[in-house]
Every structure is written in structure tokens, then in C-alpha cells.
Image (tube, rainbow, N blue to C red; front, side):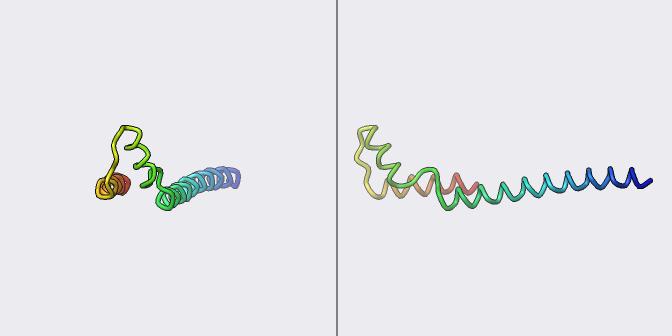
Length: 73
């Protein structure tokens, strides 16, 4: 009977470790992306300049707020 108990405990430990690892990795990535967003204001300015536009500060702020809204969803 102790063999079955050992097998069940190993399976439970593996499942618990996988779930905990997934949760911790997800939290770490969410924190990392919040602190280091993939697009910042300078990147928006460069992108608009490449398209031949000189963006105003208001346009840059609007695009950043839209990006932040999409990121929060």
C-alpha cells in the first residue's frame, strides 16, 4: 500500500510544482512588462518620424495612453 501512496504523492508534488512554477513565471513576466514596456514615447516618435510625420507632444501622449489601455486588458 505504501508504494501507491508514494506514487500518488509524487504525482501531486509534480502537479503542484508545475502549477506554482507557471504562476510565479506569469507574475514575473507581468511585473517585467509593466516596468519595461515594449513601446515607449521615444519609440513612438521615431516610428512617426519614419512615416514622415512630426508628432506633437499631444499625439505622443494619446498613443501612449492607448498602448497602456491595451496593455492593461
